[in-house]
Image (tube, rainbow, N blue to C red; front, side, top):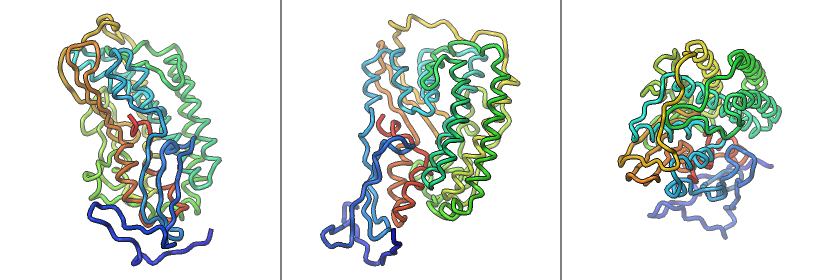
Length: 392
């Protein structure tokens, strides 16, 4: 593809409604589509690109290519029947939906999970965070042609899925975190097998550092590209690594500790340059920090005591009238569940605050202008979004 930099002074002007005055018949502009295609971190969404030469003039996100309407479905299910639904809102990190939903029910029903259960819940969430970051690393590298990275991180992620299967009986959708606690205790020998998995993940990440982060081509195509201005963070609802790469240490685990994070020694990972490279490196270091957190959890976790408390018959469970918002820090930033109940056996209203909605919609559309066509995929992946959170 030849590189042509258009004269930006000739770019279309904005109308009163904010849309661009683009005359496609002039020959200056061309419509292209990035996606939808699957697999891919952003594979189930599409961006309608208006380009001038090799440069993007405008990008409009299009969704609706995936299973959707989760929130409305939950209004027609009993509370326990909603668990298979919430898992699908974020496939690579489903346990966070389990936790937020279960914690919201517990708050409204006046239930307090046992201490041991909270330690196991925190362990599960950090295991899921590691898996999510491993998937991201493969996607970010693959967007720039480093396909071998995806093979390595998929292998490492598969090892963690072995630990999930050993603990919960399932590899992807676990439904292990339930109102009142968790379903079971850690199996015998779990600590030893987890340590073996963590060492293999650390070894894989050393290879990823050498081949990806020290790669001159990767640096050339990511350093200075896709910068998020710190002034955008609050205006666009930017959280998680996307915010921390801009030097703002936003992390719900520290800002509003939940579960047992107050007992864990860690500091939010931050960067300064706020470009694609920095966001990737923040996630790499955050992944390694989660490895350390898992070790701390296993070392400090109580080994006796209950992991669940009695609850009413879940098939006829009626939650008292009320409303609550429960939040936490997933691999992409602040995740929250707003739950309203009316005293019946069904949720009255559910609203899920997934980071992907703001990162992949309004933020992406602003950042994509003036980007070269060949860098669109890298920019999209660098925001680390999962389309089910958009189509919830």
